[in-house]
Image (cartoon, rainbow over all chains, first blue to last red; front, side):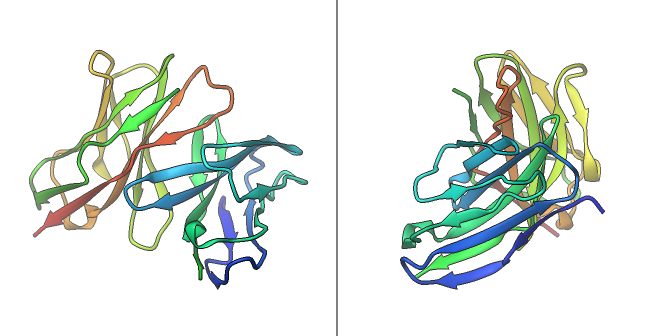
Length: 110
Length: 115
């Protein structure tokens, strides 16, 4: 089954404790991206990757890092999380402009 | 720069009545337009898309959307709403000239269908 998976689905952490949210897709898509969803703001793109070892900033990249060492994986890294990063995060992979979203990761930073 | 506006935070409609969820967009080139639906505690699901061709696009679950270039709109419609259609709906746009594949989303519209 074609899918995008994210882990963990839920995470509560404290300010400053580094964390990684994993994302994996099995559709061999070149393009992957991370979004955060906040009430009234819709989805805002954090980072995207057009292929292995090619990443670029989206609309709201501050406080986040990504890596793309292999095509199927695109982890999101928060080196020093802060409470304003409490949000719902979605990973997506794309083919010909159509995006396929993961189930989401709800992150709370205390 | 590209942008999307969904002017209604919430749309209320009675079951069986037609529904419309509004979306307007702004791009410098030709638009690539999408609608997604998000059910509670779920990720986004693709409903339909417009690239070129017929201005009326049919999608999943009986939804359709009409592309209007002069009004820069892409409203989502359904002839007869179901209670199960209640969800959060997002419109998104990509400039076809944008090689980065970046989608810009609207703020979302909550659709409430009452029995």
